Amino acid sequence: MSKSFIDQVHYIRIPVKDLDLSAQWYSDVLGLQVLNNTEERVILKVNEGAFLLILVPTKDETFAHFTIDNEQEFSIGFTSPELPKFHQHLIDHQVKVDEIQEDNGHAFFHFYDPNGNKLQVHW
Image 1 (cartoon, rainbow, N blue to C red):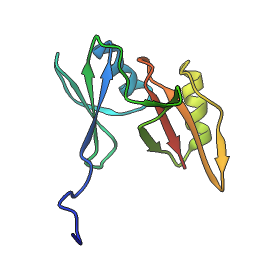
Image 2 (cartoon, rainbow, N blue to C red):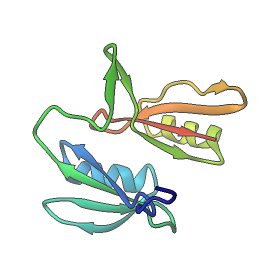
Image 3 (cartoon, rainbow, N blue to C red):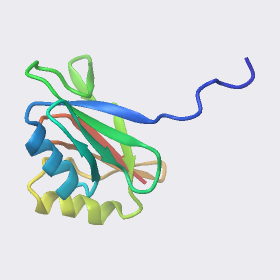
Image 4 (cartoon, rainbow, N blue to C red):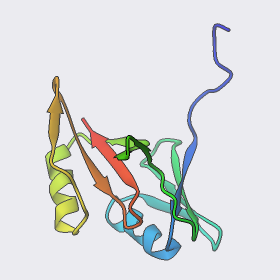
């Protein structure tokens, strides 16, 4: 097949323990726009693109990341042109963040939402 039938990734669903707290955190701390908020889900928009994050409540012990050899590995990676400012912004909001790392001119760090989901941002 020369061309995929898939055009783009439209959304990712993230499991959360407290839907209201999580919606507020993703909106207030990450600056995402709430498009829809119901008991079943919260739909958040990332800037002007078509990409959405959907928060889904669960009582299960589950996360949006996975493990390799018992080490947490992120599934969702964001970009930010102002990586150091964003890092400090998260620290100022008491978010659990790792140090900024560099790898061949590529800077990144990991951080965690209030539900323990491991996320990454890079530039």
